[in-house]
Length: 215
Length: 186
Image (cartoon, rainbow over all chains, first blue to last red; front, side, top):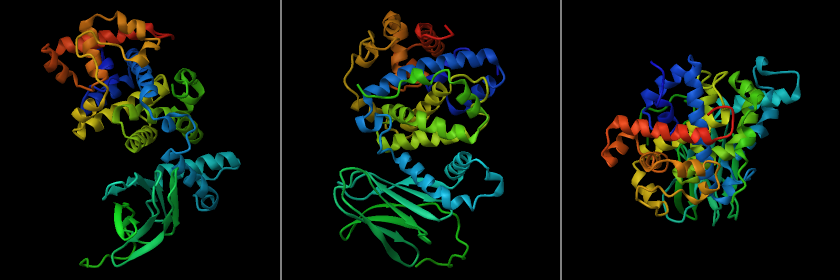
């Protein structure tokens, strides 16, 4: 690729296609002059974007340190799991310094061990909700944003539906942590007898072979 | 208005940028906890949906962290880099969801003439004078690109201009704004 020239500004504005952008990134990795021009453009667009963000972000989510951020819960879960899991980490991840251990475990958990999916809402008036889960199937974490009524969390697997607990109505965010949930094909939120939302975690394949035909 | 962390305080943190480029585990936590509220708000400004914005910011942050080639030593301001990565991803999501028209319709009415009224929130910006100083033929393509997320092909079509002309005008406009920013460049 030749020097990026005006593509630097178009990239910073999000106007390039995927291929063009990848080519630009490869080039700037080896060209200091283009790296400078791209970073200059990034600083301008970032400054505009921060001003735009200040003007459009809802108060709770925009405020630094907001407690409702879903990912703070996610990191909280990871942090809560650090101590027991430290003993399970490979020796190469264990370090003498306790703080370093925490960082290492947190990074290992965040990078490789959990994923997330939003609940699909099936009825009106259902609050937004998210499912964080260990891909190994070790835990589930259901987060509901300001539920106006109690919601029952149901775990559906091939042959059964189990009640995992209740998320209580709350003016703030509410959550339910489920350790060792076993096999789960789908997580359901029920309001009374009505299923109002569902989410499908993509967990690692189970060790037991699946039956030939589903019921 | 809102108490978003001042971005300028994050610029020039050479140690964090070096640690991030080396993918030191402590750098992940430091950068994530320091930047993610602002990065989510940047994604939200495009997507207008809180959870989608959180997903976008988190996923893009993780993608950058897991790809050592994406941010390397000497790449420049980490926060500006992450901001553009996440904003570009949010713009891609908007386009892929075919929600473009819907999001534009939800934005406050704005002057559609070529004068490019500067939004209120930018009046206070250090860039406002530079924005006002841009000639209309540069301001309008910039507005269509930054605020309406149009591709340069779409802008060329909308303004009935050659594609090369649109690219040049946007590029020139942004470089003029760069000259107005404090810092080591310009």
